[in-house]
Each structure stands twice: as C-alpha cells, then as structure tokens.
Amino acid sequence: MTSKTHPAINIEPWLDKVVQWDGTASLDIQKEICLHLPDLHEFLLKMYETLKHMEPTTAIETFPALGQLLGRLCWNPFVIGHEDTRQTLLYCLCCLTSSEPQNAIERKANSWIKRLFCHLLSSPGKGSEDTYVFAQLGCTSVDYYDKLLKNIISSLVKQLRRQEHDKRNELPADQVRSLSMACIPILTMTDVVPLLEALLLYHGSEPYEVLDSHFLYAVNDAIQKKKIALSESAVLSLWLRHLPSLEKAVLDVLQRLIALQSKSFREMEQIIKDSYLPQAACFPGIFRVTDDIFRSAILESDGNMKMITIIRLFTHCFLHEYYKDNAKTRLPLRAYFSHTNTPLVLALLRKAEGLASNTCIQHLHTIGKMLRNVDSEERSHENVFQSWFLLIRLGGWVDIAAEQLLTSDPEISDDLLWLLAFYYNPCNESQSRGRTMVEAKAVYECLVSLRRSSAICTMSFHKLFAEGNTWHPCTWQLVRHLCVTFIVFCPEWHIVAKDCVSQMTQTQEAASEVSDVLARTLSRLDIPGMESQKIVTIVHKLLQNL
Image (cartoon, rainbow, N blue to C red):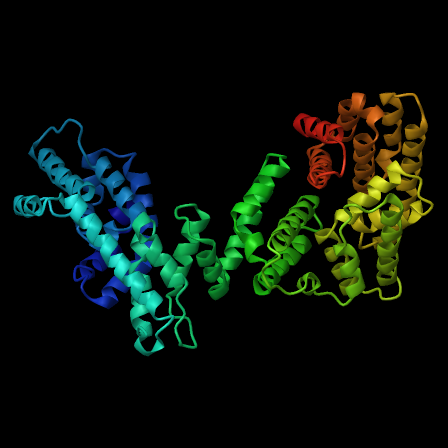
C-alpha cells in the first residue's frame, strides 16, 4: 500500500537500518549512523511534508511501520544528538498527534507520543533516583551534564594540543578519525566548538589525512550556513587540508553575489569579507584555487559584467588584506598573479594614489602599449585571455583611464580609448573592436564638447544615443562607462545627473552596468584625499535612484 500511494517514501529500508543501529556501542555502527545522518534527515523531511497533509489515523494506516521507526530513532542518542534531525522528528510526531482523540487507540497513541516528546525535549537523568543524587551533590541534572560535557571536551582538546609538543605520545590516527566522526551529530553545539578547532588544527606525523572527510564536509557546510563560528586559523586549516571545502566555499560566495538583487557595493563587499576568503587567499595555494575558479566562471559566463565586477571586488578585498599587515612575511605580490608578462603585472599593481594627472596618463600609455603588443605581436587566444583576465582583476587603471579622458585633455586619447575597448571587447571577433573604437570616439568627442560648453541641457546628452540602435554591444558598455564618468566628474552636470542616468538605464542589464561603474567609482574615491565629498555624495544619490 505504501509503495503504491507514496512511491517516494519507503520506510522499510530505513527501519532495517535503525534496527541494526540499536547496538550503538560498536564503533562501526556509530560511524555508519554518522554517515547516514544527512540522508536520514532528508528522508524525515519528505516524511513530514507528506504527514502534514494527512489525518493522524490515515497516516498510521498508510505507513504501518512509521511508529516503530520514529520510536527507535527517538531513543538513538546519535540520531537525536543531531539538532536538525531531532527537530524534524518532533515535527513528524506532531503530525501523528490527535487534537481530539475519538477512541482508545488514538488516546494511547497520544500518550506514547507525549512520552517521546518528554524524552526529546528533556535532559538526561530525570528519574527520581537521579534527582536525589544531584540534590546531594548540590546541583541540578542540567548543570551536571553541562559541566561533564565541558570537562570531557576540555580534556580532549588538551590531549590533541599536547601532541604538537610531544610526538612520542601521539594519538593513533584511527582514534583521531573516530573522534572527528563522533563530532558530526553535535558539531552545531556551542560547547563543541573548541574540540572542532583543536581537530582542525591537529597535525599528526601520518602522511595522509587523519580527519574523516565527512567530518570536514559537515564542518564546512555548517560554517557556510552560519550554524557555527570558528576562528580564522581553524577555517584556514580546514581549507588548506580539504580542497573540496575550499572550492565549495568559493562557489557558495559566487552564487550569493550573483543572486544578490541589491546594487549596494558595500553589501557585496561585506559578503566577501565575511566569507574569510580574501584573508585566506593571502596563502598562495588558496589564492591559486580562487583564481582558477574565477577563470572558469568568467569563461562560462562569456565575460558577464556582473562576474567581472565580483572578481574585481574580490581582488580589491584581497589586496586590502595583503597590505593590512606588513609585519607578516609573504611572497611578493607579483608572485600571486602568475603571468608571463611580468612588466604588465607590475604596471597594473602600481598604486594610483598621489600620482599627478600627467603621470597617470603616461602610465596608462605604458599599460596600453604592453597590451597592444600582446594583441598583435604575441597574439594567441591564451595570451590575450591571460592579459585580459589580469586587467579585469586589477582593473582600477581602466576606471582611471575613463576619468582622465573626461577630466583632462590627453594627447593620447586614442590610446586610452583603446585600453577601454580592449577591456570591454578583448576577443575582437570580426575586427569588432575597431568598430567599437570609432563609435566610442564619436561619443567621447561629444562629451568633451559638452564639458567645454556652458549650457547644461539634458537634451544634448540624450542626443549622444541617437545612433545607439546600430552600436555593437561592447560599444554600449564602453559608452555607459564614459557617460557615468562624465556625469560624476563634471560638477556642473550634477543638477541633471538623475535624468542623464535614467537615459542610460532603460534595461535591467544596463542599470546593472551603470550601478557597477558607480559603485567601483565610489569604492575608489573612499581613499582619503582622492576626491571631494561632493562627488562621493552625488554617486551615493545616483546609486539610490537605480
């Protein structure tokens, strides 16, 4: 009957397992329980979703073995030690409770469920004899078991830490592995955190990983879901010893940022910082893993601007962490950005703060010249991609190029426009970059004329987009960048800034691109002494209106 009515729910296999689990004293059985806890929790969730739409009597008739299964699970200490599973068991029992029992069977079922509730919701040692003993000791049973747990954990932590200084009495690898397995059901308990950290920081003399992989997966999952908070050193040790956990952490952050609807750069930056990945990336091995994931992400997204913004922001956070503590001995920064063109790496890593406008323009000319050489003399898909990927990671000079184009009169405007065109159109399919250059230069020259004109007219700004229907998509991206920079850095145009931005953000994609440029500008201007507070204020207002 069960298989026909509910093909997705088959109780018998789980009942067979639970019967075998009755002897939890066996280490093998304990390990099996820990391994099956995630699947068991998922099964109980499905069961609850089914039961909550059924009457208690109907549920018992449909699943005759359900009572036996739930009863055995409720008395298994490893199962109910897992917080989420215990909670789901309570939900399932609630569904079997009759609010108004009509017969002896329903009354008996309610009584049985009530006893299970008391067992699940109470601490150990509620019998009268235990109560007397605890009274003689001058404490309650709750206090006793709480202190007992803390003492056991404290002893285990001391034992693990002692091995760092005394390898002669090192714990057997099997014992450490079993201890890590035993932590899986209870790892979300606050009192267990010191033991988790001691295990993650433990390094024996074995040439292989002594901690169970399921334990490492479970700890990383709990960290990502904010169920536990570990020290930075413990998280770093987890990622260094377990590559899948590091990869999952990076992918989780990427997914959160991509799904984020808010256009707040601050919120994106906070998500990245809270992940602890920028700090961990100061270790070259971890940086290399994040770098490889970002490469794959940018290729799979076909150069999506949202992804570019995320990668640039992550690199910005990483650089902040790298420079924050100069006392730490680290590899030179150029070693992190492995690239055959070392001069290009050094040029892009150069800080722009405090440099005169002419110096910035000459440095931009140098960067453009290096990239042109890659794009012509050394052209290959791999070389161009490597150079472009480096440019988007260290893209601050791209924004400075747009700013210099519209706030000064550089004689090398073509070089700066080419740099922007390469940033937005690195592939140059069908020689489309040349077309982008021509279209963007026409808009740039109009913007220069508007900057020199004393008349402030939104209609003149709107005319810039008269030929927009024929533009290459990369041209649109470049033009939006130039126009946003023009509005931000030409104070006389601030009074009509909102109308001008509205003209550029007719689609969600366009609004996102404009928001990214504004947010990057704001992030760069937060450096003390860079620009006036007036510009920062206008950027804030424009972001709020998007």
